[in-house]
Length: 229
Ligand code: CA
Image 1 (cartoon, rainbow, N blue to C red):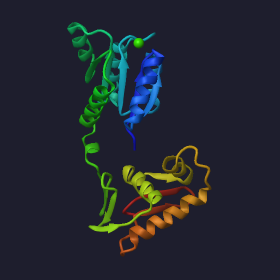
Image 2: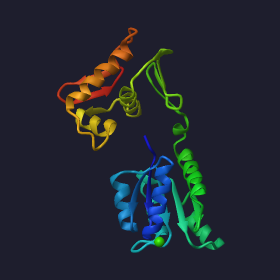
Image 3: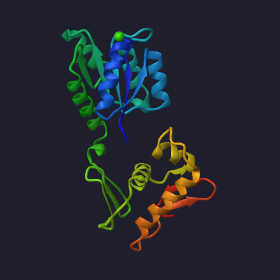
Image 4: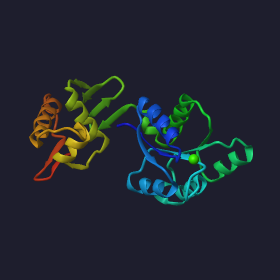
């Protein structure tokens, strides 16, 4: 899953530039044009990191950062402050408010991306590990390999994405509609039945060598990765 970055900035051309660079580097991007909107968006859907401009209308970037740090749900959310000011006093105030890092405009996009990756890695060390595991299943995201009890399993691309989604959300039940949305994508115009077809293929691949059932069918709801099921 792509790491989600919330850009909080009121200068549209800079937002466009940031979005372009971040998407090219494999991030998903959301935008907020002011501090109030930023706090609403964060409450709605927690990003993996926030790029926060210092100079914002309504609520300043510093105040947004303080509020992010005060709320228990977002205390550990990585924040990088963006600012045109380069003075040491401002730098220290920015870090005092709880920002994890600080980038002075104009900045190079590649440096910003490197800093973003670093703060996300520090906040989520398990993301650095490119192997997802559940019970005796392991998925190596870098090598695109899956194994069960050490034996390689060959999956088609859709089954791979489906299993990755379950491994990233173990134990959670997903409806067929949710799976279509999250695994196939928003604009997929597919029938619900498609999900059942790929679940069946995934099961056959996972259980082919005699393993116990890992994908639980929750009657009239959907499916979950659940070793106890
Ligand atoms: Ca601004």
